[in-house]
Amino acid sequence: MKIKFKLLATFVPILFIGMTTTGYWSYLTAYESVREKEYQLLTQTLSLTFMELVNERHFLLVNSGLENVPVFRDAYQNEVFDELKLLHRSTGKHYTVTNASSNEILFSTQETWSRPPTDNASIVSVNSYKVAFGEAELNGEKVLFACTSFAPWNWKLTISQPTNALERSLVKITWTALLVTLLSLILVSFLLGRVIHHFVLKPVSKIKQATGHIAEEKSQVSISVQEHDELGELARDVEVMSADIADYVTKAQSASKAKTDFLAVMSHEIRTPLNGIQGLATLLLETPLDEKQKQYATDLKTSAGILAQVINDVLDLSKIESGRTEMDLTEFNPDDMLRDLVTLLGTNASANNTRLEYRSRDLGNVVITSDITKLRQIVINLTSNAIKFTREGTVTVSAKLKGRETENPQLVVAVKDTGIGIAPERLQHIFEKFMQSDTSISRRYGGTGLGLSIAKELAQLLGGDIKVVSREGEGSCFTVNVQVKVRSADEQQQEQLQEFDASEAQLSSGLRVLLAEDNAINAVVAQALLEQLGCHVDTAENGLEASIKVESNAYDAVFMDIHMPVMDGVEATQRIRAAKNNSASVPIIGLTAEAFTERHQVFIQAGMNDVVTKPVTLEALRKSLLVTLH
Image (cartoon, rainbow, N blue to C red):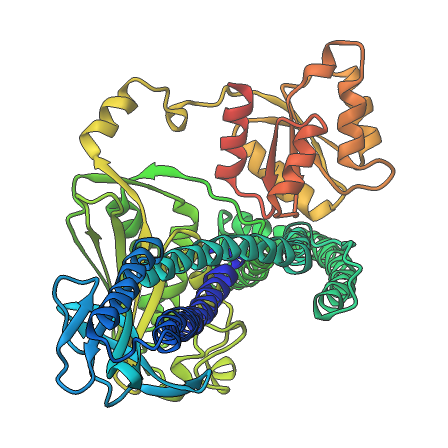
């Protein structure tokens, strides 16, 4: 409910109760006032009209000396009665004359009459007459009455008036009061609404719009609220806050850009020699070696792989924190993917004297749609952790589909181990960045403490989460669930039969390629890998040399390193594309240690056909050539 209606819903009932109470009090006051006036009118009529009429006839009778003559007395009294009849017709009031001693009715304008009770009546003196007046019920009808005595004739004179007319007038007053109250309530509510809108809602609306703008744009705002009250102070505080936020956002963006640039540079600087180490180790393992040399080369390649994983963890964390992580949804068989991962990690498990098992349920004939890279990374992180902390024990990876027939099916993967477990006081911190279950863990087992944090972030990006249960000394169980789309594997196979499978395509032998790479070791590695693919390789040490060679030679493809002296890969690509001969259309594949996707897009927009991230592998080079040349 909007604040305007809340305020009106609060104030209007209060106003209604107040005005109704005031109206009821006014009604009671009016009723008493009208009744008092009616009493005054009755007593005045009784004393000034009724009694004057009787006194006048009695005075004439006394002056004529006929007071004791019954015939004349009766005649004068009958004249009084005739006058009372005329008064009744003209005023609507009832007049009654009774014998004061016997209560015998001598005259009445009412067909039936009973004496009103005077015990509780009020008594006043009017023109030297004592008059009793009050309210009574006579013959089933409420009346106002007034009465007095006339001693010379032993009469009791009574004048009465039904309360119907009084009540009708009061009803009119009541309805008038209600109508006035209602109209006043409507008018006051309207005026109150306008006042609230002008002095409260309008400033609040401006402040709300400003805060919404701050939330969306993170920029400074100006609020046109000139009032010098609490809302005016609030508006000015919001303006100051927006300026601070804009300043903080600018600094944060600068810091984020600096961090991104730093990571991009560090990624390049670390991945470049790392590419050489991994590549040379791979090439070395393909040469004749004795067992000790082969072991050394294998350990060298493994160490380089571990270092590459640390770098990838840092870069993944940076991507997640900056909100630049992208979803790459593909369709795949989860059972095959998980079996391949278990097989891949089996070597690590064997080296740790750990038995690695895999179990699945309801995954035999289905394919799911999700980000296979992120899902694979989650499972690898969880399983690698379990193997690392489980010596001479068992690690079990199990998977199942949950809610397959619903609108939101989930893939649930559980990694259970019989390792060292996690202390209860450290369990709640296990997913924090750079946090491990024990400060001695990093010294004893190694690792950055980023794996679980990244896995949880990736699981949430996939619409799920990770939960853990553990008992120290007995092991742990990490359960990850992610949102997926599910369909039958038979449907996928039917589609695949109609599509071109690039993985089965073969590269043409004898491709002539140009390799532009300034790092001598990386050049040796890349050249050896390309030659294994059957390519004839020319080399260039910088972008300028590469562009000159492309202009004077016909190449099937160019592998262009991004960071080179004299002329970098991007500038060299733009120069080649700007040429006026056939060389302008040569396929160009970028080689870079920068792992950010948005940077790859920059290279492609500059004219490159594809980008391969270092450390380069034989399969990555082969796939890139297939995609580019087909």
